[in-house]
Structure formats: structure tokens, C-alpha cells
Length: 78
Image (cartoon, rainbow, N blue to C red; front, top):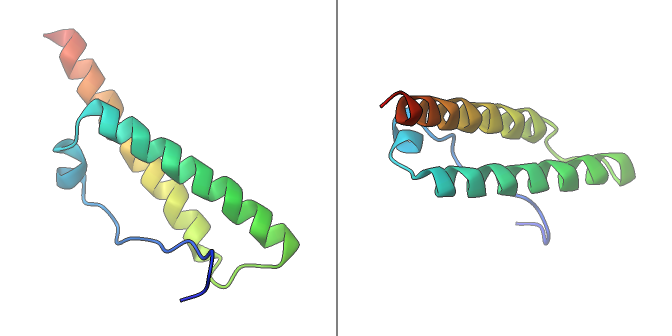
């Protein structure tokens, strides 16, 4: 493994995300956004080994935000 390389964990399933608390989901979103910023910087400076990682991170953020909004809307509806 390369030093400083961001390793993409396997894609989280929606059922796994739904088991997480709102705070955990928000934390995960923040981590992924930080990773994307770092990856974009690396892409400009030296290029990326696997540019697909950016797309995977963006999609995971979208998945997390969607489920977070679902949780919040069901909580407010109750």
C-alpha cells in the first residue's frame, strides 16, 4: 500500500446506513467530503492512481445524505 493513499472501503449498503445514528451518518459525510477535497488536490498535483475513487466517494455521500433526510423526515412526521 502507498503511504498517504486513501483506500476506498467497500460500498455501504443502504440497510447498513439505516442502522447508523444521525450523528454517525453526519460524521461519515464529513469524512468523505474531506477525502474528496484531498483527492481533488492530489489529482491536480500528481494525478490519481484510480480516478474512479472520486465518483465512488460522491455517490456514497449522496447515499448517506438521502438516508439522513429520510430519517429526519420520518422523525418530524411522528
